[in-house]
Length: 135
Image (tube, rainbow, N blue to C red; front, top):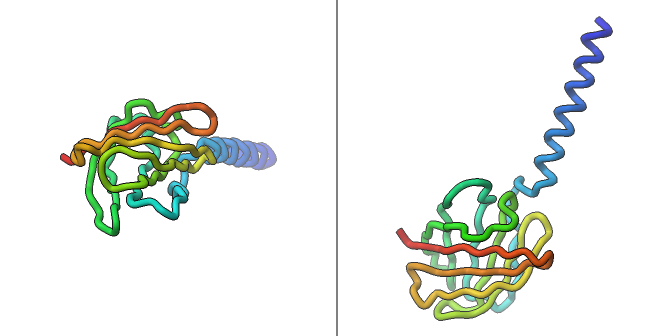
């Protein structure tokens, strides 16, 4: 009986350690909202993990557009992130904020609104780059 109690205790410790490790990677929950009082557009993506793409939306002035996000250089693959664009056309800047506490400025090119290029340099120096494509 004592052996079963010890085994159960050890399994509880192992489970807690495994669950704690997942949470520390930042892959739980949703992305915090990127703050910008003047943003024309906003969007977010779930943690990419090893996925080659994911469905996302971009909302500009209250109008939602559907896209598929393709990662090019995603430094924080296990963190959901949100982003803002300062304008709804052309090229410009904005902000990216991720659930793991990293954030930084971004630049985008939406001269072709069906194929938007986004690149951010976060405060840890790592780059997040992806494309938003209407398909």
